[in-house]
Image 1: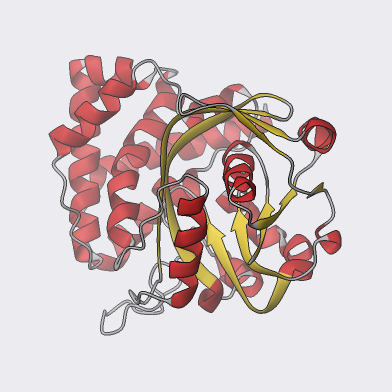
Image 2: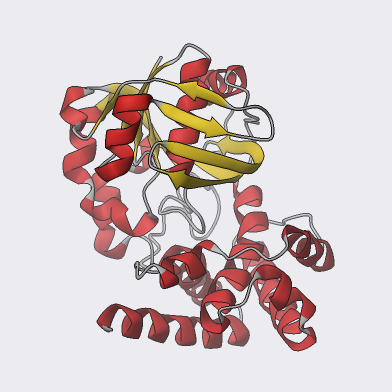
Length: 325
């Protein structure tokens, strides 16, 4: 098995280090100071489960890696359409792509045999088919990340919590390629269940992302502060309720209560969401996959979602004006 990690940032480097520790042939593709540090000293993982150092091959040039059995994508979803030149050298006839992204993936309606929206393209995450052109649907393995990491220093990844990477085929089959990947991830000390319908995990995680990410960027508040403010907590609950209704209209029925989901977020404490961190760092906000696609699916399924629409309008404006400034 040969795995290439394209975008070996905090999550990608952590996964790559774990796989390398299990004896898998893994290649990390990164850039900048992080790349230089990993080349010189390897990947240093600091974790409550035990610190370790792994020294997989690291490069900035996918051409040095060549064709892989799997490509683990650690890029932001909005980068997929422009990543064709990076992906091309890694792609063999049967290369599978694991997109460890937040929100709704470009392949969401692929493989949903019998559903009215089967094969429907979601413009928010696949504008004009630009992502599908780079990442054909049949290559996709769904992946939902329940793992928190951060780059503490170049080449140093701090693992904060969680080791679960739920994976699954868009067509709900339990495929040999998913089973083999799961076994490799587990050998590296990670949890990697193969789900019959990974879409349920997508929506369960998205319930938190769709509310807390944009609200935190708009208010500059941590997750705990949003939960502890009664009106903003009510706003989160309303956004989650609309999201559940959209999920069910789109053919998925997540089994989780809104109160349980909010209480789980509250226990995370004074954590800044990734969207707030990106805003403070002057980076592009990942709003299309996290909330834009949800609003689009609401339109496709004719589900009223006024709260999500209003918050999306506000965060979209913030995204545009923050990039201008």
